[in-house]
Length: 152
Image (cartoon, rainbow, N blue to C red):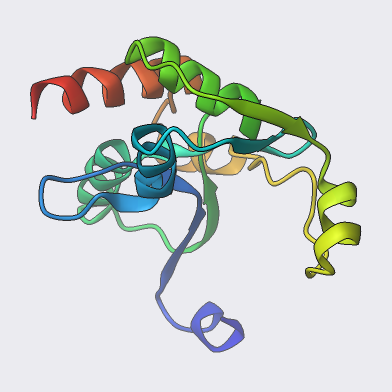
């Protein structure tokens, strides 16, 4: 990434979610567990600010015609816990599922997995100011995703 800083490059740091008809996308594990009536562990203390993949694609298309370079964070204007993210999706899609609320450090200790940050939300102020693009809320992104999911 350091080498790209010295050339005319645009780097977008982001987190996104979505599905397609051919590929279930990064939510496939969630829908698969619901379908199989499996318990889902949801982190109540891990936060992020993902964009719906269709929104991210639209943003990238808009950026292709702009003449700005650099490294930018792109995400929703607010953050949400992983638990609330999945609860919001399930509510919009009228899905019922079994879940357990868990804490990241408990999972790390129990399964001896690599430490991860609890707050992965993006500070998108530089992006919005530079590109004059207003980014959406997580609620709007989930509404858009749910509409597309139901109508695909």
